[in-house]
Image 1 (cartoon, chains in turn orange, red):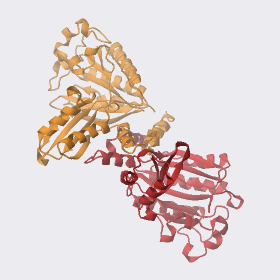
Image 2 (cartoon, one colour):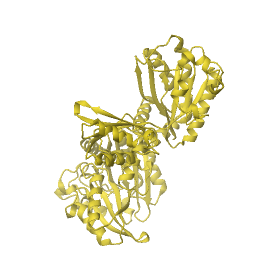
Image 3 (cartoon, helix red, strand yellow):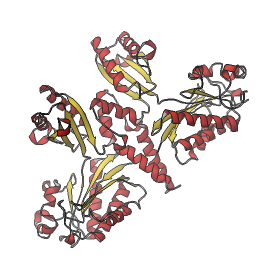
Image 4 (spheres, one colour):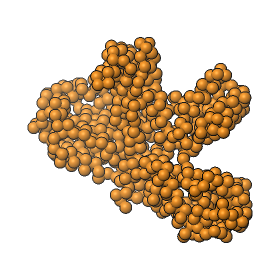
Length: 307
Length: 307
């Protein structure tokens, strides 16, 4: 089975019933599983994590968006997090047996359906973007719901799908394919924030480091140490082991040891087997050799025969 | 969901219909999945790999044993592989969310049922053994089917379950819990078999090395290099990374590089995350953070709600 993940963001973090109803739409699909949900009252925003078979995921996301359009009215919305739609952003993330290209096609299929059937303008972003200024979500979202009825009239911001005017209550939506984001932090055996900042600078894209690494130095005051905190936006191309080894070398230069690390939240199996593969020098290895991975495929497959 | 694996061995490697019928018994159970099957005509023996929810796995193994008892007649059996039963040996292997102790209990439950309901004597072996001379399967099997009707009369070889005489056509069966066996080979950049043998000797239990490592040196003639070939019989206690690091140190001593490695066949996720954890110095990590692992649990869980 191919697996795609999605992390749709909805502009309601205060009404549990609304989010339950939106999740209920996803639960109608046999090959879609809810991995996580979180709502933030101050942001007034909810983030659902789901994964499953690509066609079912797309159908589930469409139904969730339709339900959010019914239940969320942006003209009455306030919250700290920037937003431009009731369903604000729908990222699609390739997890297993699926390429980025296939995932981009899925995002276009979903975007077109939302535009055509729900009458909501859709912008393709990240890997799905049709022009370079639409890659970055914050650029697309700039102006937010309140200013989008004028922004949408600019030729540069003509939507990729749907009408040329915002939906009166649901605004506009960004849909796009992006890589899985791994949140990875490395702890250093020093209290010098200067060392953490220098290492962060050495490895992050913006200052000359790895293309798909964002990094900052932080103090962990309680422990009296510092941390290099990273968002790795493409673990396939800027790999965990390569970044880790550079951090180790840089820390060595300051006579500082690495004392620990952490993966925050979820991580795809491939990001783990890449590290496994690298350090023990595997000549060939397939995820199909992992019992739990093979079981997942078999269980999902046997499920199919029931339907 | 708890997951236990089993690799039952049946004394027929020549009649596909017989093995199909035995596997058919396992397929009747909702939470049992067949991972692999292989039959060897010379050995006249088939090995089935299955995994799933513990109670369903035990029920499936009982049904498979019953079917093998109907279809396989050891009085007419010949083959190169030593054997003492139509169903020869049924190992249970803890994979996820299950302890060795729980697995031992399962093996006793299965053994008792086979003894009581099928009238076949059962010996508990490996971690389930009730005396030290029953731990090793080859010791239990010694004498094979042909000599077991006298062996079984010795007080030392009174069965753990079932009658005190062999089943006329199905013989006797060994049932037991053992750890997952990881087959792991490390390739060295030299053609000196002497170096491979010295390293194998350094790491294997029998000559003073790691308790749960069996190792031999081999020549890979085509490639002009040598290999340390290992069976790791408890990857939790004699870990892959620790053994690998010792091999690296020993090879260094001879000025020989490690040029590659391979995992032969299946491997549990935990053996991989242990290596991941070690090299990047994770402070805490849970398999529940692995998307595919969590999906497997969710899919297996949603399956349950159907039944």
